[in-house]
Structures are given as C-alpha cells and as structure tokens.
Image 1 (cartoon, rainbow, N blue to C red):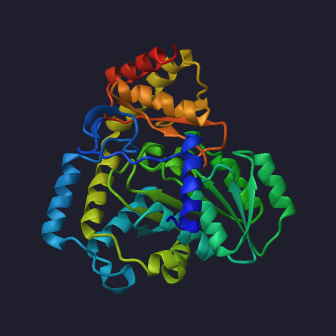
Image 2: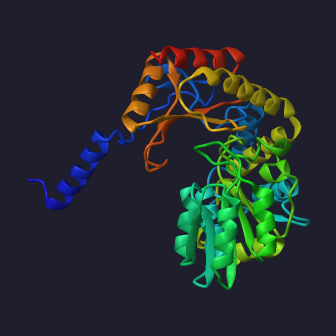
Length: 389
C-alpha cells in the first residue's frame, strides 16, 4: 500500500508529465563535441554550452592527464585546510589578470558557478541590504540573495528605468545590483554600462554573472571587456565549464572583496577544493582562449549564419549576438514535440520549459559552437524548415 506522502509526490509528478514539463536525462556515450552518441544514437548536437569546442581539446586533455601524474586525483580537503595547491593558485592569478574587473583585482575559484554566486551574495549582503535583481536572472543569484536574508527587489528584464525607480525608493545600509551578463535562456546581453552608472549613482555593488559571456565576448575576457568596463564596484563571476570546456567557476574582484569571500563565504570555506587536475586543465583552456581568436571568429560566423537563416522560420527569435539562439515555441508540449521531431532527424536541440523560462515561452534553445561547420548550421536550418509543415 502506497503511503500518503509518496502518493502526493506521485500525483505531482503525474501533473508535471501531463503539462509537458517532465524532465528526462539523456545518456551521452561519447566525448563532448559537435556530434554526440545519445542513448545509443549519433546526433548532431546543438545542446551544449561548450561554446568554443574546448571540452575535448587535445592540449587540455593532455594538461589534465599530466596533472593526474603530478597531483593525483582528489584535492583532499578544502582550500583553507590542505586542498589549495599551486595549480589552484596559478589559475587564480591568471584569471584575475585576464578578466581584470578593476586595477589589482584578485580571483577565487569555486567548484561551480552556483556556489560562487551563493558566496558573493551571502558575503556581501545581510538583513540590512537590498538586492536589486533582473527578473530573468539565473536562479542562483536569487537563491544567494534569499539565503543572505537581504530584501530582494526584482526589476523588469534589462529595464534600466525600472531599476532606477526601485533604487530611488528602496533604501538599505548596503545596495547590490545583481544581473546575468548574458542571459542563459534568451542569449541577450545586459546593459552593463548603464547598470554600472546606476551603481555609481546609488553607491551600490554591481554583481555580474558572466557564465555565458566569459571566453566568448570581449576577446575572451568576457562581457565586462566587451563594454570596456572596470571598477572597484564590479564583482564578476565566470564559469569554467562552458566556453572554457572544463569545470568550476571563479570570482574576480577587488582584493578586499575576494578576501571577504575567503573569510566568510560558507560555500567556499566548507567544501572540498576541486581536484588540481581540473585547475591545470582550466589553465590550459585559458591559454587557448587567450591565444586562439580564430575559434571565436568561427563561432560568431556561425551565429550570424544561423540568425540570417532563421529569419524565415515562424518562431520568434529574441535578438542575440551570442551562441545562445532561442526559438520561442510557446506551449511546453509543442516545444517538446518539436525537439523530438528534430531528434528523429538526428539533431539534438533541447526544449526548455517552465519553470526555467516563464509560462508561455517554452522554446528550443539552440547552442552554437566553434566546432560547428557551415554545413551543420545549414542542416539545422533546413530541418527546422521541414518541421514547419
């Protein structure tokens, strides 16, 4: 006999499935690349955040293998006990110099972007803080604000005037503006120059989640560099598992901010450091990002090719200069069905549905990569066109 508490959960799962919102894990049986073996079938993939095609780069694989020979596998402890190796130290120095959100900036590495954003918000905010958050921010920025017990005030997506109004009417001992730099489901870029101007006007921090801009924009340095921004008010989070192709994340900011996170952030203090082999792999990835601009050129050529070809498709495509090219279908069931039709034709383009995106905006999230060829992009566009009828 099923208990009441299990029956309640089962009923909830049934409702999700009926609404087209059930999540299903796909088993990948090949290294990351432009094609993947998924559940036993080969598919041309537009599903990955491996924007520069670095996840299987030979130099990065070699760096990881050599690092295992030198460092072993596990870090053994947290960074503040015995887990902080020379590999981690060098990676942090290189990231700080490359991203450089302000003069003399430092960096701190984390196991994930989620942990990094929790660290920023819980260290800089408290009950007397107001956090102003874009309505389409990644969940971890909102979770960090809530965990800090700050007052969370959300403003309309990329609406600078709405933010200014909220800054003028919500007062706290400290103010933090928090935003994605590149929004992960729409691919659009936040108006960072205007946000920094408001941070200056209202004596606030500007926390920038650059998970989807680092490596891709600003000659690889990220969205701050794309806009030529630098300020002691900037706190920049970037991830190492997307364009960098490895794993983990970092925060780059003024040394006083970094030291505050090191001393007070629970998600940094109370977790085992990432394996040093990943730090060495990330250093190798950073070298490729710095030196191989041709990869970004190929990626941006594919973005332009897809954007031009998608003009004739019936689905709304938000304006995006980034590798994230969504096609808004609307209904969750319809988006899932369209994704399956593409899968039947040998393409993997995931359907994104609520609560990841607002109700009524379910979509295909097309992720382009430097690894894609012109023929790959044309095949996607042709297949999407065939699915219209």
